[in-house]
Structures are given as structure tokens and as C-alpha cells.
Image (cartoon, rainbow, N blue to C red; front, top):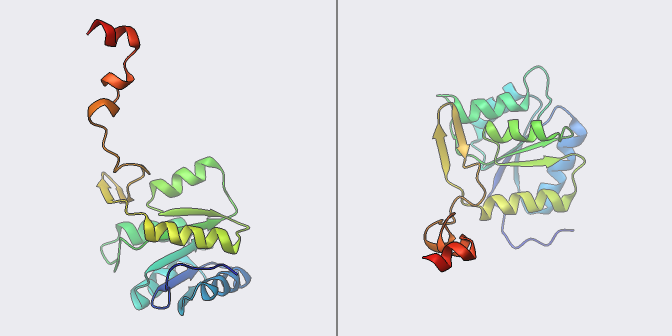
Length: 176
């Protein structure tokens, strides 16, 4: 059992996966963490309807859910005018972990990516990371979602700035 440092009793989660077994596994994990309000959907269209109905604090979605993919659900949540919460954190859960897919998910506004098969600990760590991660949301062109730069809040001024005195070659510093 995962020891939690957070009280998740009032957190609402939407789980979208076409596999009843995976939804049940995720739901069991969430209940272990203390989550009491869990809505389920079997595809992206149903997931978006449940998003409107339940207004969850977190969405966990599979990528492959015919007829409409989890990636399309992410796009609708982030981009649609009728989305009730384009800022809701989204964890993409999938067995397809190729770098191109991870980048595509990130570039469509996914907050976090989790590979199947997942462990209870890995799901918990992703959720805690979303609680503790305060990346701002960015709107740029057709992208809307969490800032894709993980350390975007680190200032790059002074000597830490690229080309600053601390990073200059010794000969260039001596000449100055």
C-alpha cells in the first residue's frame, strides 16, 4: 500500500479507458490513495460528456479508445469552446511509449505520461507530481496546455545565463 502525504478524499477523478479491467485497476489504486469520487468512461466522446457532467479535478485517459482516441479527448478538453475546464490536469496512460507518441501527447496538452503496465507507486507519483508541479499554462498558436519546459521557472539571468561570466572560457574571463 502506498503511504500518502495528501488527503485526496475531496478529489474527483475521471478515468477513460475502453478496458473494464484497466478502469477497475485504476479505480482501485485511486481508492487506495483516498479518492472517493471517480467517474468512468469507455471512450473519448463519453469522457467529454462525463467531464461536463462531473467537472473532475483530474483526468486519466488511455490513448487508444475506438472510435475516438484519448488524444482527441485531450484536444477537446484543451481547445474546445465548450470545455468546462481546459486547465484540468490530464495523465495519458498507454502501452505505446515511443518517443514520438510521448512528444505528440505533450504537444497536445497532456500534463503527464504514464506507461502501461503501470504500478500503484508510479500512478501515485504522477498524481503527487501534478499536485506539486506549478507549471503555468501556455497558449501559443494551436497549442494550449502546461508549459512543456519542466524548469521554465528557473531564471537565467546573471552569471547563470548562457554566455555569462560563470560560463565563459577562462581565457575570455582573464582578458576582460
